[in-house]
Image 1 (cartoon, one colour):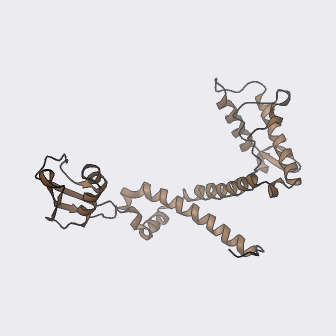
Image 2: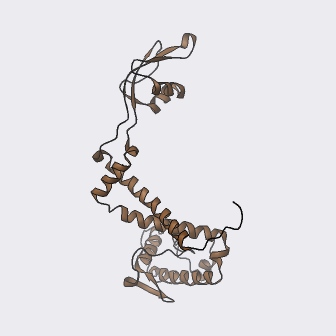
Length: 249
């Protein structure tokens, strides 16, 4: 999105000043203890300031800040607060569809990030309880050992996943293999190109042990808690808000 005001008077710090969004996100930590500036009684936290400095340094070929970058970035953060105040005064956050979408997305991102930070500190008991409750998520895929008779079809020895069988024999054969009992077989192709596929052995999918699946458990737990946080917030917000639907859906 173009921001001509940044260009005026040589004020452009660099393309990395992507910190200038009209959306002001809530701080995840108390910002007043380390504020680098205040605008209309609102603090600009040191964390936001340092993040902006890192973005500018990353945009430099040298990877370092220039002598006047620190003050210039601080002034741009102050400008950002002033512009946001004016945008709210004008009601842009209520009238502009793009801005409304940005605000909704920013709020979801905030809820997700905050919940992810909390979920990553979950103790062993919480992870194990989640693993037991959602064990179906950590089930290994079934594997099959086949023999091909009557044609030179390239098929590696050992157990194969269905997706590997599909790559070599096609989707129809893959589906039929999944339905076979051990020692069962079926024909593929026609005439001189026909051959038989026999199922020698199979390993049905089993639940991976917690220790083996721990990394996947942690990732699923964080994702599950993040989705739940958004749902819980919206449920509570609906209960505490005056919502009236005038038109038939």
